[in-house]
Amino acid sequence: MGKSFETAIVHNSLINTSNIHSKTTPIYQTSAFTFQSLEELEEFYHGNIPYLYSRTGNPNTDELGQAVARLEGAPDGVATSSGLSAILAGILAVASAGDHIVAADDIYGGTHHLLKHELNELGIETTFIPFKDASTIRKAIQSNTKLLYSETVTNPFLRIEDVTELVRIAKEFQLCTMVDNTFATPYLLQPFIDGVDIVAHSATKYIGGHSDVTAGVVVGTEALMAKARQKVVNLGTNLSPFEAWLTNRGLKTLALRMERQASNAQLLAESLTNHSNVKKVYYPENLSSKGNGAIVTIELGEAVDIHQFFSSLGWVKLVPTLAGVETTVSYPFGTSHRSLTLEEQESIGINQWVIRISVGIEDSADIIKQFECAIEAAL
Image (cartoon, rainbow, N blue to C red; front, side, top):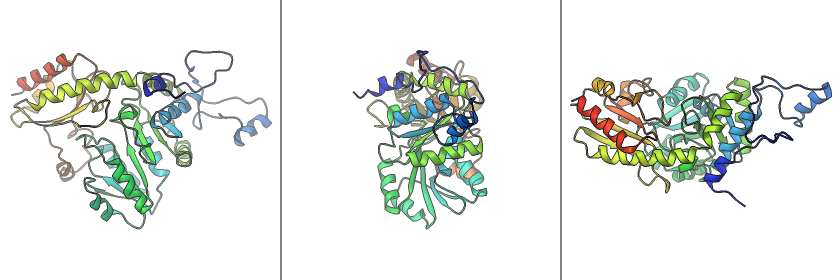
């Protein structure tokens, strides 16, 4: 009998503990695994024994990759050391020197930098364009294009990607598609089921959920994940067993956290929309039947002293990340999109009054009051 998302997410342990019958998967905090003989060692290289060295595989990291894959409806997944290394592994499973990528221009700044600078040095060129129009995407595709890359919900302006259209264009040109599903999580969206080839997550964010791990997961077809896994092994971007265990523990409460955080975010967005000193509120509509996500991005009016605003937020912390159970704020202009040129920032709408809010699980009235007070104090 098939399980609902909420049930499957709790019962995601995939590791056989033999006769020990542990309720949760133990932490396999070991750098290597032992063998009783040379013959047994050889069995590893024939695929008959699963583990040799924790860089090449570990029960805890395997459990995380497979658990997220199952929630995304994908056949396989690979856990990595961070969200960016998951993105890197996914891209390198498809593209190599001489290849070309077409990417949305309004993606996370760290990914933009990876594509524009690091991968460019490896001979992989990227063209950044607005993904709002299908004809623009088609015009950017070259003879050596291998991949269309975007985010299901973009960072920081929360544009919902038209995944169906992206997949349609990719099939037309025989390309692969890859999306970052960090903001939506598989609780709200499952792009692999909609035809996307590779889905990446910064598991540091909602998958882990408690701001105490740095991790990534990439999921997709078995063939592509075999290539991604080999890149993780060869580049040394594996996740530690303990962090994998912590991330798996956090994953069990994803549905509960996202339900509350998305509800709070909706109420905050509605409140700030009517605020006279908030120039614009960015918050998705009709993202999912389960909610519209837990991120709200706002652009404050120019009458607001931005430095005083951040100083007046009280228990709402300024951090360069998102998705913990606490409400926090970040400053794209000075952190996540800092590496972009001023022209690149302006082209996608980032300026010094843009604030990204990661809404937590606190009482919604307290969250709303905290932002209203901070804006009032900054006038």
